[in-house]
Image (cartoon, rainbow, N blue to C red; front, side):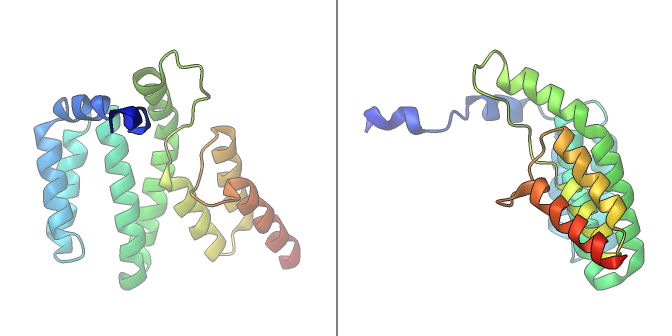
Length: 176
């Protein structure tokens, strides 16, 4: 089986990375995961603690933004407009933070590799574009797609933000 070891994903950086993470951040995120959608007050308190604990680590803050944006997006489907507004606010912050994350990923994980750099997925772009689309605000959704395309961010779909933008342009045309 040793012949196929080259196919295995090199997780050595992942283990090294995990050992340098803040214990307070990890504990707060565990509390958040335990309480989300079961006890929203406890979940929000843990999320706040994780935010404070992530202030000195770009990767922790990135993980925090991803968790918080997803949480408020899902929460909005059951509890109304306040979480969707919070999701939009956090998504915009996450998008502003994305260049720092991308640079850190390049330095830490890509290094001098000759392969093309693929930035990490930033879910805030997708969530914000979807929210604006649902609100009928196609111009803002298109701007989100443009920003994602500038940074070469992917959204996990086959067509990516290019196809999303095309679809939004068609909807915008029909709306007129």
